[in-house]
Length: 99
Image (cartoon, rainbow, N blue to C red):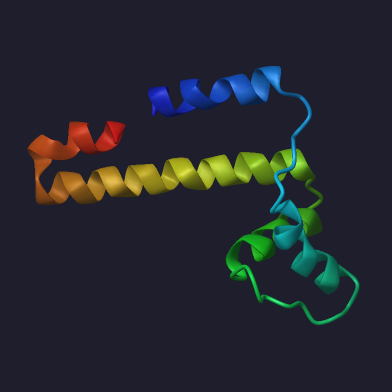
């Protein structure tokens, strides 16, 4: 977990303005549709991440909170993967944690 947080700390410390990738609109378009009381179209993206974005907006969050939640979920998935590998082959868990 220390490596996880150290590898992402630069973003939260030195990157005060989140940036947008070319596919960012594909994630926010369904959220805008729902916020405007129209039916969202999930033609390109599955509804999971847009629903997370909507939940964070409804709870009063902003783009920084979305990024923090995404990183938290990534850490949680890594921990779940580490525990799953540990249960199958305990000796290979350290190798799975860095991969």
